[in-house]
Image 1 (cartoon, one colour):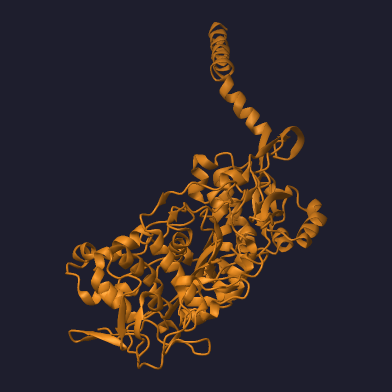
Image 2: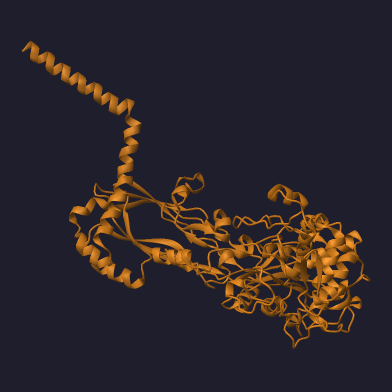
Length: 609
């Protein structure tokens, strides 16, 4: 009896110590665990802010996104084959989803299928009594009202990836909520997504909801007004048709981005509705690269549009003046190499103004020779080429402005005069992005002021980043010549001439492969790239832009009409411009000039090794 008493006392003492440990020492910890099993905190995604264009036109709207979920603790009471039939899913896929969820939590519902249609929701609701633990969840997604128009700028939504799920930036975002994954949606995601709400509910041992204990409403995200004008954007994209390329339009007195085109584009609604693997694979394997942002991520030789840079450098350095004349006989020879002009018969004797209007290669070979590559490179960089834009949309290309130092470091070779000839007309090693060329035209149009590009509409005129040390008379001379390119007889940009607004511009045809000019049979991928850079109106510029059509052929034929349509769309509310030629423009075309009835062939095509 005594031994039994000691044993019983010891057991009660052990039990008391254990109770003291659980209730006192670890009481708070186990209380939290108990409450966690009894309570569920459900994050509620906030409605995203709406994105508008500069005129207040909505570009997106919020839409409900439905999914069906299953409580994993009621699996023993669910007929999985019948459920697979109801949801039109493979039963092995359902089993795999359940296993994946079990690794994370046995209390959280398993999302079986997302992006449900109203028909699917009605069918599931009618059969819910047959499947305990089945529920319909609602999230917030997007409807992109203009489809593929502006997709590379606006971007799209998607589910958080593994890295984002672990990031503290998304700690308050519901696990399955949509977040910005590209473009404006990603860049301003924190502002657009708002503050999630939460619902605290009581559940039973099987995880079934018993009652709502408390609820905190989500706070709607902030609206954004873009600098984009959707009319200009749509008109430019429609003008491209099935062509591949890019276009960028800027407001020269503020730096606001009026249009941002990359073709071909894609439909961001595919991502907002939960893109299927086959759809994602098709986008990634498409040879035309619809996901590539060509405005910032592709770089091309600028062709004759670069003659603007060479001309500015020559005027500033005194290598030429407005009266300097050069004789063009169809090309020049250097050693055993021949550098041809696009017009085989030559342009005759012409000045800088007519050399730009008619895009004479020989004039700029001579100008480049007088300047040297280092001075050309200096002014190109001053004008924004070879630099990043500062936009954080994508990882952009910076282009390439070569000089003697670059060649020595990268190629371990000296720089040759023949390479200067090519560089002076935008060929050879020179490479730019369409965005850089739009910025170049903005600086020429506004008198040498550099503004930080803005994707959002600005409430007031910003201060310029800098004023370039380029004489106003130099820029005035260039603007006058660019007016002539479009509006004078013989101008290579005649197809951009408008009765609505006075357009100034420069054509460019960038050689893609080194073919002899006698070659008649070119595949599509061997055709030249077509450029047109412009601003308007001549008197008080309100829009500056660049258009690049990959393998489009001649800039005056393929790219200039696109620029014209975009400019006219922007100026639609303005009265027709007078179109009067500036005093320095001259009126009569020189002999042999190209007119509206004659297509300019092989611009910038030179015979090179």
